[in-house]
Length: 111
Image 1 (cartoon, rainbow, N blue to C red):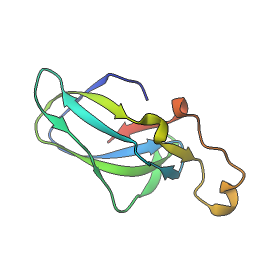
Image 2 (cartoon, rainbow, N blue to C red):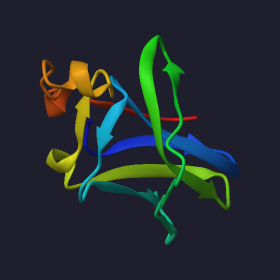
Image 3 (cartoon, rainbow, N blue to C red):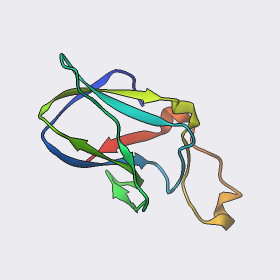
Image 4 (cartoon, one colour):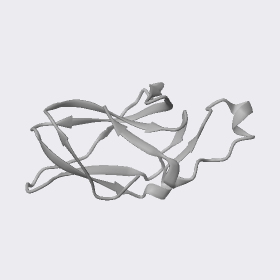
């Protein structure tokens, strides 16, 4: 999770996914998208159904959705990134033997 990362997004609704594992605990972690050279600030909405899938060849878990009202370049700001905890498997039996991934190895994707 790099700070001050910028991306251009067209109008639409996007999924916010955590890559690296299927056991995801968000705690107080969140993010906001700030429009560059504008006033728009977008806060993602947490999803009730956290769907597991694969993205970019890695385990992925949807944690939120983002509604982009206008095409613009946005800057991602992570709030409380150390509160995000991810384990590879969400099975209880395997969870005892797995450690949480280091924060610097957790990836977020918007698709």
